[in-house]
Length: 103
Image (tube, rainbow, N blue to C red; front, side):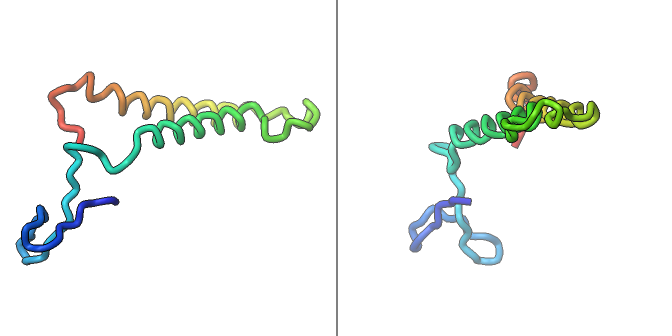
């Protein structure tokens, strides 16, 4: 985690009850992570699930070898739906429940 270390006696660090100066993570002005990096990786993960579902990782095989059993297809489809559902919930829950603290 990237945090701001307080330096010197005039720093903005927090001194705990035990007298140890702690790092401060201030995300009011900017965050220490990248939203675009997260969405890029989420896109890559969805493309990977699509690739495994359609067997794109073996393009030169015959169609007979590319056939999957139906339980394997349903496991892949349900896992992609579950991932999509969790992602959409993280986006929509703060809008649906504006008074709840999601920290």
